[in-house]
Amino acid sequence: MPQSNRKKRVLITGCSSGFGLLTAVRAAQAGYEVIATMRNQGKAGYLHEALDRAGVSATLEELDITSPESIRMVVQKYSPIDILVNNAGILIMGSFLDLTQAETRRVLETNYLGIVELTRAVVPSMIERQTGMIINIASLAGRVGHPFNAAYAASKHALIGFSQSIRVELMPFNVKVVSVEPGYHKTEIIRANATLSENFYDRKSPFFEWNRGFLRLMMDRVIPKAGEPEAIAARIVEIMGLENPRLHYILGRDARWATRLEWLGLGQWLASKVFEKLQIARHRENRRAEYKKNRRKKTSTQTQES
Ligand SMILES: NC(=O)c1ccc[n+]([C@@H]2O[C@H](COP(=O)([O-])OP(=O)(O)OC[C@H]3O[C@@H](n4cnc5c(N)ncnc54)[C@H](OP(=O)(O)O)[C@@H]3O)[C@@H](O)[C@H]2O)c1
Image (cartoon, rainbow, N blue to C red; front, side, top):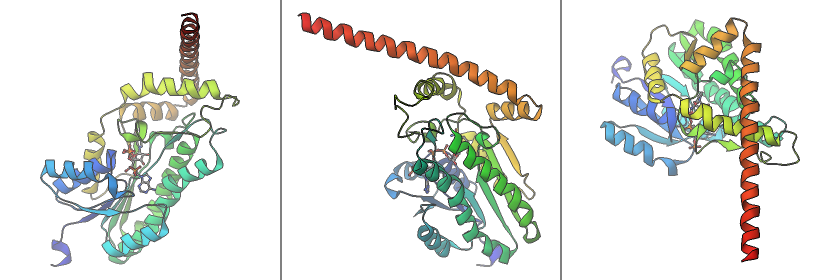
């Protein structure tokens, strides 16, 4: 088949759930040839179901973006790739002091270094063909620092800096680079995949109560208000079809609101508001913990007496 008649090939990372899964289905619906990758094929069930429900198909492949061997094999097998969606990412929550060095490295290796390596492997064939698009899924946390998510925020800041830099480097070769920066959305990264640092509940940590307060704030205020991920997947697929995409796509009300405040020079005000909410959540969580402790004490005294 002549090159111009073939479907555009899109490789997406992290398709076992969330944005990756939804984007894979939508891209297949839009007529792209989709290579939907995930690090653990044992988790492919949800994607299979979603593809079947939509009546479309995709090629499923194993790819761990922290493994150079895995990257080499997949890129060799599926080259040339027209559009690369660097979507895979992880979140390890807790104060920066409580994250171990290994945890901090894991976040940066997945959310930044792995993406750089995969992009380095894919781009040469785009340069050769003088066409291509790289879509990096960054985050609001890559624009505005998130307390108790410092490693994640640092990795996403790095990713935005990377996108901004290589966008110009790749201009002579007609390879487009896009940074998608969503706010909070209801995917597994803030549910089943959200990992707490090893030392999150270490009572000796000066952050013990603050870690708990932060978690309470997430559960009570942030997660219930998080957006629906379908809108992000739809936007990513729309970007794939653009001739001249923008560099930044700030998606979601929270992301637009927080970045605007930063642009207006109101970052300090925003930080003080977050701190205020954190104090309230910490206080509430302490009261809950105290109440639970007293109830346990009361129950054990009653058991002993009877
Ligand atoms: N949801 C939000 O609120 C939000 C906001 C802003 C940005 N983002 C970004 O959006 C992207 C997608 O996340 P999501 O929200 O859709 O969360 P998700 O449902 O947890 O999806 C994350 C995906 O990344 C995969 N992954 C993790 N480490 C990997 C590795 N080493 N190699 C390959 N795949 C790996 C996960 O695989 P496993 O299933 O094997 O863990 C999963 O498929 C991430 O980059 C995230 O930072 C999310």
